[in-house]
Length: 299
Image 1: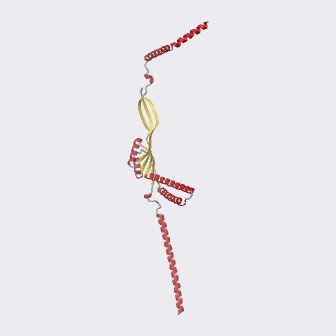
Image 2: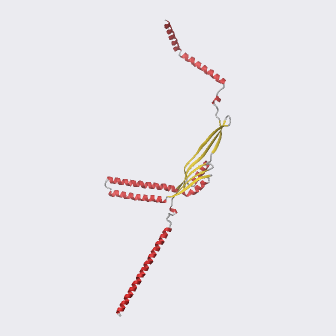
Image 3: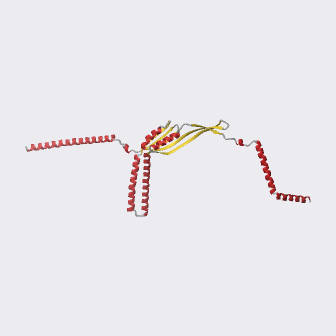
């Protein structure tokens, strides 16, 4: 009996061990499957999740380059500049000029001439407009367009560049602190201190450059740049002007000219007589010398 009980207990223990092993394997498989499902779901979520920056964090530099024809360049320029100032912008440059293509002069009467001038007017304008008013100003400018040659609008996102510059500035600040600490605690020799100070200055210059670059980018983000090239069709201007009289038309007649000539001759004769009287002593001396020379020559 005891032997049978021992055998039965041994068999029961083996059965329990086999059952527990199977349950452990089942639990392990379920855990593995659960982990795989979890990883798969994580991958799906990671793939489905947009790897983009939220719109609120984006920083756009918006620019526009527009070339178009207008009816009157001068009037359109005034309208565009007024609209720019109205919406908080300013005119960075405005170059209004006329180009003459041809000039003709036609005599239509004895004292009148018709001058014909063919010319064109154009203006190159650079505007700086608040980013929030960019679309409004562009739509306002479109009202002046008679014929559109080209329109290029760009929006460059510089948020990552700004972030990169800020991170570089922070690194430079930390680097400066470490260098200054090293100078104060470990710098013993003059050449070591000078080298360290040069490194501090170089780091500070890099920091300033990044700061200025960020300020420039931020200014371009805050104020968009609009470049306009406007022109009008060739214009013809005609004007009647008075002719210039021939200088000979102002000369006196022949009788007056003869009278003036007689007077001028008489004035010359008077001047000559006065001159002769002024040099009478020289003339007398000359005559005496001549007579004496002639007398001695005969002898």
